[in-house]
Length: 211
Image (cartoon, rainbow, N blue to C red):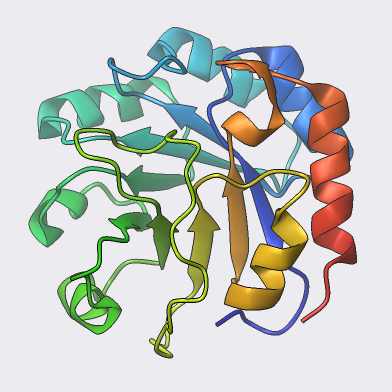
């Protein structure tokens, strides 16, 4: 499912500048900032801006939104220099467009979900992000979906999320063969606070994984 080459890494749910810098130092390709009030990892636009402006070049800054009104997203973009938008709720295709930014659409992997249908709907998405499903919870579940579930070739990068840890990420990469992996809780000491040693170990595991 991946584009040939190394698996990219996003550290999501960053709430502190020191955590963002630890992720970058360890070799992360992207950091994720959550703009969803019900998340324990939510950040204000002002803090997000501070974090973004302190990052070096070539690190993607991703903003995560869940069923957010268009005006709220537009207002956030006036403050925060994001590179990429991640829609993690029940958004329709038209809700993801019109911001002059590329976007990722999260797909919660319920049994009835067909990736080919999702690609058809979100044909202009830069990638699809596959996450575990938990009723009423949009990301950050700490759960995995069935990685042995057959996945069709969809002609679009796949990002694997949901319950990834130092212990399971290499196996997940071998099974899914994703373009990228996205981790949040698996590299934390407590919710919202990243552990620099766990981030470094996670990234080492990804770099050493073969498929």
